Image 1 (tube, rainbow, N blue to C red):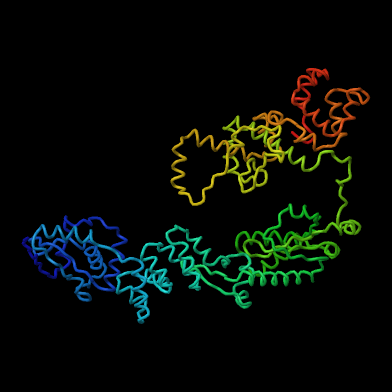
Image 2: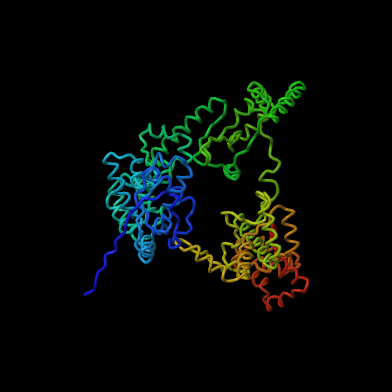
Length: 614
């Protein structure tokens, strides 16, 4: 039978000046912020847990358990000179005294090793229960010695379905995932999503999207344009994401209807300004290509001129404005003078043109003014509003090369430039540094954006062979991957691999820049389109007309129109012509011997490119 020994301990109060931290205490270093927070809690709620220590033989005690509490009490004594009078229980805290060193050492280790914070689920339930009993957040904070902010965050979760709190308690979801459920007031839907996400490591975004798949944030451009009140007045429901501190609009259909109605009202107001037509667009941006694609011509405001007196006054006001010394009347006068210089559309201009109204990504209304539709161009020209185009579509003969073919040829040319650029990695990296440090806008040398820089024709690899680094780089699916782990693995492959990947990516994004920069790049890289592309029946000859191929055959072989070789070729069917030309360009030895192709003609064939191709 093992003998049990009961250890007894005395408790006594000591002035703070008689208490020091024992070397046995494992908490020798504590962040100042923690001490500050605990001091506030003790001042509010009192010393809930006593200190523990061992006598020092000088009438005081060394604290082995409660080092943070001791520091917090000492901080309060520094702040409150009258602590002994106003809070004597804190100026003379109770200390449990260990009977010997071994007991003191055991206390020092046990308190810190055995301490466990409340599980968040237990805190949520406890705080919620106290609130339902009438306790205020401040009272709850004092009772648990925590901050009011912490209480508010837990109470925000107290109204969740019990099943969600149970899942949190069982560690089937984490605290962040539980907070996502506050966006939903539909308990059935919440329980359904809970079952789907438990143990599946869903992101917060996935959970919120599953709970409210159609919800729109208040930062949506439509919501900002019409306003939340107008949306609610139309019957739209509003929810919230308490932890993201954002409002959610639960009825996107209603938002769309209110947005369209408001946009129509704005358009109607502009119709009164004398425009021939006003159109409201649902887009958030109208690019230049939109105007081109829809065949709009554009005219601009007639600028006004200031009189000598107005010009002098304008300079005076501008100087005051720059010195931030312009009063309200001066601002109005300067705005009026600016309006004169900026000009306006004349009545005649408005009578032949229109405007498109849209709302940008910030929720602000924008207009594109002075647009003349295709059908109205003739009248606008007759009225002197629009100038006659000097580059009509019918000027000159129509090219035998279709636009689709021209696009393919352009891709091949770009591929050749990229192919050549791989030879000069330093140039590519220097260009990247240049682009990133300058605002090159549309003249940037690399397509470093979301748009593609195509280099692959629709005829695939027929007659086309790029460096494999431009063709054998399938996109990586990074969804759900550990990006930290992936990046570490990437770096472990070494500097040469990383540099090679950068060079490959930059070459695939190369598109040139402006005319002078593109010329400099080509001078450095010396691209040769025929190095990577050979015209074939599939990628070129079968896509142009028979007369074009006859002219090409004569030109390459230096034949007159009545030469037997030329007339024989002319009588062939289109497919046969294309096959003959393909064989000629592929260097068919028998064909070239039969035709008597000279070295000069062979060089011409090797260098030939269609018109417009570089």
